[in-house]
Length: 196
Image 1 (spheres, helix red, strand yellow):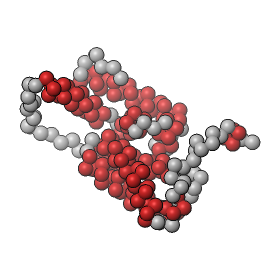
Image 2 (cartoon, one colour):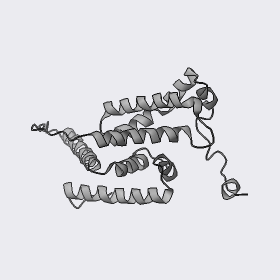
Image 3 (cartoon, one colour):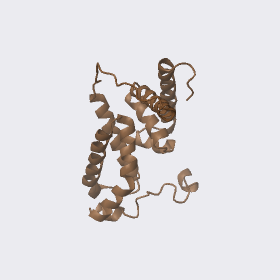
Image 4 (cartoon, helix red, strand yellow):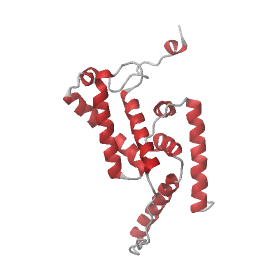
């Protein structure tokens, strides 16, 4: 008896979409609508975090579902979870988009609005979010993907490694390098008081 069989946790590797997989493989439209309801928000959020563009993220998410629909008749159960495959497709599409993306430069800088205390608190929060987004934008694509999957999508390292087609130790190493690069970038732009 091998290790995986001996120490298998019941339901741990079960595909969360196994209840609708047979219907999906027959391309049942109702089952596909259920699949979309289950995963559209998380896939859109993943893509938006990686790309920093909500509209582009929506396009990527639609493309992921289209590729999923086209692939479903050939899906082989027991290998990967369907959502893992979908996240991998989304990650790869985002990485491709980031490689194509060119920086946009502008001469106009928006003015800060208001002096109200609530607005000031909102501006500080917004400024911190913008600094984090800017620092994330400076990272190499794979580092950005690792941070997005692990921290923003809150996925276990094993799932992140599967999505990025890495071993768990390789993903851990990538995540460590990503955090160090992000911390360095934030310190350079904000100052030494940054904690990650």
